[in-house]
Length: 194
Image 1 (cartoon, rainbow, N blue to C red):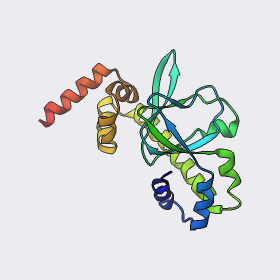
Image 2: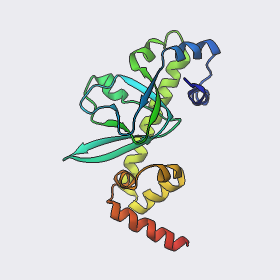
Image 3: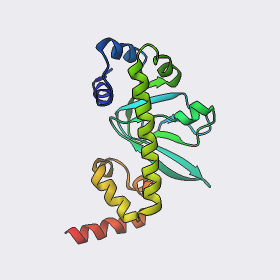
Image 4: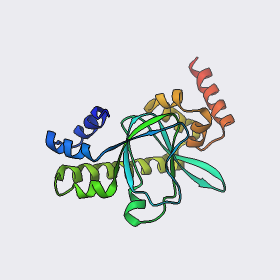
């Protein structure tokens, strides 16, 4: 199990002593997901957080049998529905692999039990929680205040790899538009820049 990527992600936030990281790493479980395999299902209480070591996943909600993508997770991202776990309520979202994935999974309970042994883990956990809240706020703000073209350009600027690796109909879902509208936006951008 390769832990270098998660080690680098953690180092950006807190300082772990080697023995502290080893203690943390002993609790991590490697999970392989096939394309379209569900990591976390809707309607169940979430119990795990995870780190994407390889691959892309999508977190989505369903309304009237239509999917609305809330977030994409790529290599180096942390994911997990802490709100569902903390409130002991079923998750309103599902997280599914878009391509074969390798994730490093850890139960929330285990993470919390490590707080007393390794105080930096609590600091790290709080940082991830604040980052997730910021992501949700930015996503909601973009959907309320930006045009689909502006959302597409922001995605192009901030996460261009998604446009290469994620099917266009999923990009359209994420942007809150139809695939035909996405095609028109891309055509206009190409014609204006070409």
